[in-house]
Length: 232
Image (cartoon, one colour):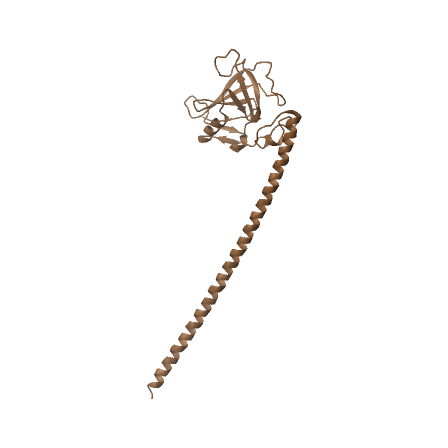
């Protein structure tokens, strides 16, 4: 079975209880600036079934160049799991309600509603670009964090969060710089200790060589004395 590639924003992932991921295709694109339920129903069809079960159409899934296979598929399935909800490659999360109850599967007349957050594709190593010029084009969303609100209030909060994040990054940079400086000082001290140890070993070596030379001379003197005593 080949790899299924999420090539469209109209492809939606649904975590199934049998350990697979169902890929549904529909013409529904969530309104980025509102949570209103679409007025017109959307036709849905299964585009793929990802997993290792016999009824699956594909074993691998690709999202923005990142491949999910084996355990990675289960990690993704667990991540997107939720009652009657689905996720697209942009990270938009949509839940649905079926009028009249009954089956919980998505249907043509299912009423859809976008949730007020984004799925954190970044935790799977997927880099997603949020559309520019919308309520979702905000710092805490592009970094995979939850949305705090919509409209001007949300934008103000987003700006505050961005400033706090920048301050945290600045403090972290200072901390990293201090750590690097301490590492540098520790390395210099270690180098000094190694140099002192090497110098001490060299002095010991020179001392031993002198001792050996003196011992050799003493031996020569002793031999000469023995030789002279033989003539006396």
